[in-house]
Amino acid sequence: MNIAFWSNVRHQSGVTSCVALMSVLWTELFVEEITVTSNHICTKGLVKRLCGGCEYEEKIAKKAYHYMLGEPEYFRMLYSGNMKKTVWLNENLRYIPMEGEAGKLFAPVGLQDERKCVEEQEIRLIDTACGYTLCSQKIVEDAEIKVILFPPDRDSIDAFFQSDTASWEDYFFIVGNYRSEVSCRPVYLSKRYHVPLERIGVIPYNFGFEQAMQDGSTIAYIAQNMRCSRRSKEYWFFQCAKETVKNLRKYVIYRRDVQCGECGKVSNADG
Image 1 (tube, rainbow, N blue to C red):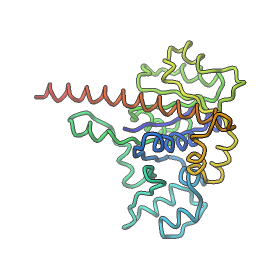
Image 2 (cartoon, helix red, strand yellow):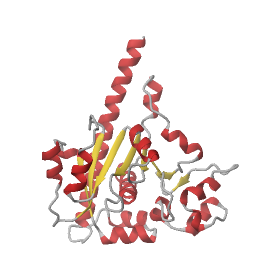
Image 3 (tube, rainbow, N blue to C red):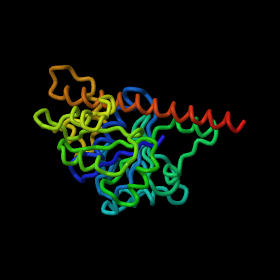
Image 4 (cartoon, one colour):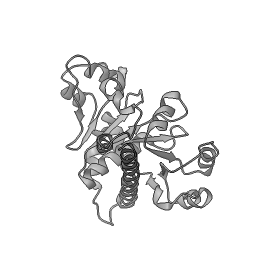
């Protein structure tokens, strides 16, 4: 199942940070395999932010590359020839680039038979570039679940809901970079646009997490702090993040069950 993380505003909602946080917490809390990928071209993409920089990636790839090529160009090199190997970031988390074999991730999803329904048990989180580029819009359109991130201000939320999207059934919403003193809270989104609170998550701003993303130590930071005590300064951040990933997973399971039910109806009708 493809889950596209996207925002209608740039550099304010923390899309890449959210994918990194949700993917690691998912593997840690539920011991399930997660695949992450991205359509970004940037020098500090998911791999570098999650578990290190050049030295770590070169050790995995066993070849040199030019840092300024950026993450997608580097992985084109990695996936060329006989080097088509998944990059495992920890025991249950892997990265696949959008290019090459990973292009299959974005193929249109159908529910023609039971086998495809079983295949959709795999969870793939997509760090989708913000804004309305054709590539990003195609990824969001084809994804079974769309996770929309907002900065904590009403203008961004109102602008998104003024679009002509007909249904929000496969959407999950997250308020990113959230601070306790902001005026725009999840209840605004719920009451104004009739979104159930269980489909609205919160990711607070946290300096320690931001620093870990910059240092390339995100996996280690999360593993070290995710079960911190109430006395820890990290406690509120991780409580909100864990509640968000739990609700997202519940919604993914619900939508998957709905799709598999529809799949069964199609199969029975064909029979």
